[in-house]
Image 1 (tube, helix red, strand yellow):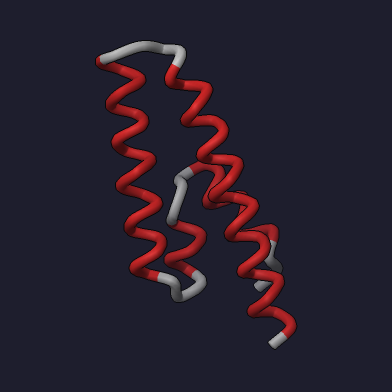
Image 2: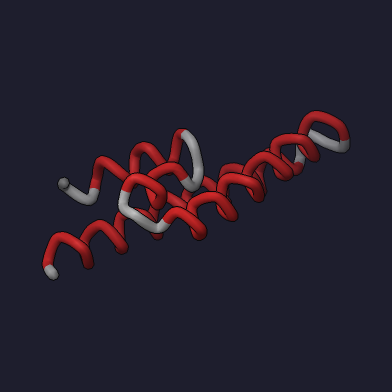
Length: 73
């Protein structure tokens, strides 16, 4: 699988790209953190949404890097 696919999936649903690459535990942890950030955005402040965007970008980049590593192994 091309590494851009899990990266896009992880940007839209953080952690799911890691799960489809076989990193289930890591993906679940990243997904739970994304849910916590989303809840904080809803109940605390919309400024936290920026943190959520940064988190989604980080998770997408991580999925891309892991996908690139898996592709070349």
